[in-house]
Image: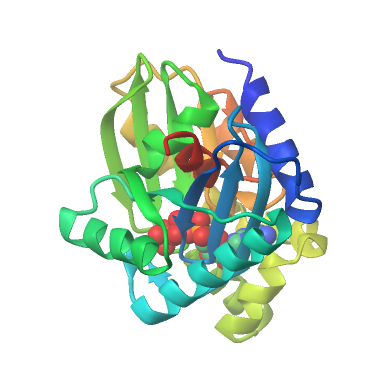
Length: 271
Ligand code: ATP
């Protein structure tokens, strides 16, 4: 299988420039805007398509791939754009966006309008798995996007998406399990889950639901030549989730250092 070196390097570089943007002038900047359920991420690349700046914000403007708070989404993207423009001392003009695979064109309109409404000139719209694979560079594998409400599985053959599925099990179920096990409210469980310090303790509690996600993956990939899985999406931030998925599916499983940053970088590459 592929080495994922390019992906790991891009994500590591991106993490660095979020704190310390690279202010050397570039003739052009490419921006990727990723509107997620938990998080809105903006990634900026220079003329050589290397990360130079980025910003993100936890937000509640998208649910299951649908923009539910349009005004809020425009405002956040505009604020992140201005924040980066100030850091880079330049104006960001071009941006690309993405929608979950299988989402109808109707919602692609909403994402498009959010990006344009925030002041960008939109240069490209693509599906999130194709975007992620711009960075992952898998030939015969699957992008597994474990988000809030759903788990998306996109199978690639010769680097192109040939099959997609979206199943209604995701991070929300993880939080419900934690809520039940610890007697916490859903919101408390959600915060507890996002804190990396609690992950080791949570893994045994979450094992059954992670195994359920694994069996969903196995079900969908069984008729395809899938040589590797790559995990993206907020729920994959859970430390150790990759080991359980690899063991249960029997397929080599790669997890980027930060699974939330792969798609926005891929969107920026496509800009
Ligand atoms: P959806 O499937 O609902 O469309 P999405 O792909 O837009 O969602 P993401 O933003 O990728 O969603 O992921 C949201 C989920 O990730 C939430 O359930 C959230 O609790 C979870 N999450 C975010 N950060 C972490 C973390 N550090 N550890 C564990 N889970 C996390």
